Length: 213
Image (cartoon, rainbow, N blue to C red):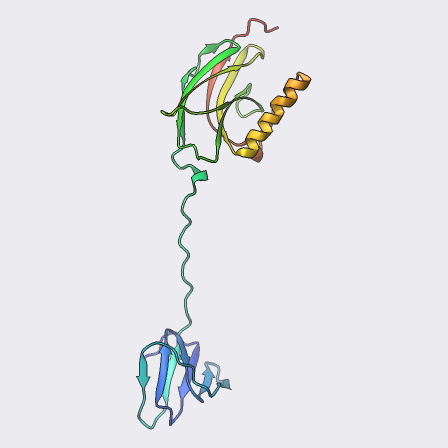
């Protein structure tokens, strides 16, 4: 019999007439197990029946079987979850990049692929990639569009209007920030971190504030 992958060698001595094999594991009665390095150990004398093909050796001679170790079953890659949102997309219809806006800004846009466990927020920044101010949570219409009014009373100059996707914890944090600001009259910007969600789109506009110093 041809050898396949020598790890353990089973020698069936004279008098043993049947050997039951299943995959790469063998059970036999009163046999001697010999390792490739020559060491031997006595097996239990009680046969253990297993399902599988039967191999008989009726001749008055030893039968040598080489056992190949079982290989691990590969784990298939995980399927994308809804939170990964592979088809997420947003678009600003107004204002477009380069537009000059007043402190009262009506934002029109559309989005798709937002996971059911996520929330969409409009926020503003005064510097690209800088701290931001949450403005309004966005609820999409049936056709995926939205219309929201936001205010920004900062100084004249560049302004980034952005859409951000966050979870329940993000929304609680922004709501608490707004309530605290309403109480003390101050709304300090928020620094982006893992708890503030993910920016999914921005438009750079120019703020023209008549009351700007």
